[in-house]
Every structure is written in C-alpha cells, then in structure tokens.
Image (cartoon, rainbow, N blue to C red; front, side, top):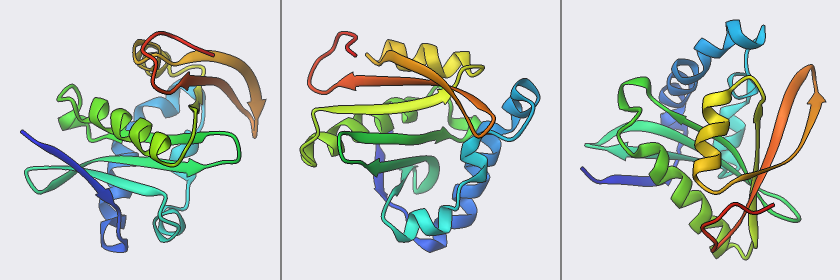
Amino acid sequence: MVVTLRPAIQSDLATVHEIVRAAYTHYIARIGRKPGPMLDNYSALISDGRVYVAERDDTVQGVLVLVPQKDAMLLDNVAVAPEAQGSGIGRRMLEFAEQTAIKAGYGFIKLYTNEAMTENIALYTRFGYAETHRAEERGLRRLYMSKVLGETRNQV
C-alpha cells in the first residue's frame, strides 16, 4: 500500500486532533500530564503550513509537524493512528521530514521528546538520531536529538 504525504488543510483538523489524542493519551499516566503535542494549536500550525498528513487508502493515518528554524529543521511531532502503527507510516513520515529538510537547505534535523517516552527514543536512535542533551522545560523532562542529513550512522 502506498503512503502519500500532503500539507494538511483546515478540514483535516478534527482528524489531526484525533490521531494526536490517540497516539499520545497512553503517555499521560507515565509523565503525569498531557504530552506537549496534545497541547499544540493545530489550527494555527496548519495555517502556517507546518502540518503534513500521511494518507493510505484515502484515509489520513499519520500527522507530521515540521518547523523550520535558523539552524535546522525541527521535527516537532510524528503521530500515527494506533491501528496503523507498525505499518511503515512512521518510517515514511521520518523519510519525508528528512527529504523536506534537505530540500530546504538544512544540514541536519533535530527533535525532542519526553525522556519517559523510551519507545520513541529507541525508534529515533534506530533511524540515526543521536542524543545531544537533556533539559527540563515547562515542567517536561525533554531529551534532545539530532541527525546529520545524508548519513546513515548516528551523528550529533
């Protein structure tokens, strides 16, 4: 099955919210509050052209948020509908994020995740991201990672 990515539009907003809610709700008990992606203003992010949706069989099954920054592309959120997890949609979104960053002229891509989201950290490590530092921000203990684009081994 083919996975395609396209910029989200406002009519995708309810689906984007539902996928983010479904993908992150199980982390609330682990971290003691809603994860950052559950608090984002997706209407504004869609209006700003930061949100992409992944479709398979004409159904939105993934959400990707990319934020260009001065020094790198920020991979701000990757969320896959629970029923589609393990199907390759997440991998396709990560590839798309890297391709988009390269096309925008960036030499690396960065992200952060809650340090309690160990599954995500393991996934990003498998995809070549390396930890750069940890910090507490807005009451959330975050782990920062980056990846040099165009290389397959772990880089900082």
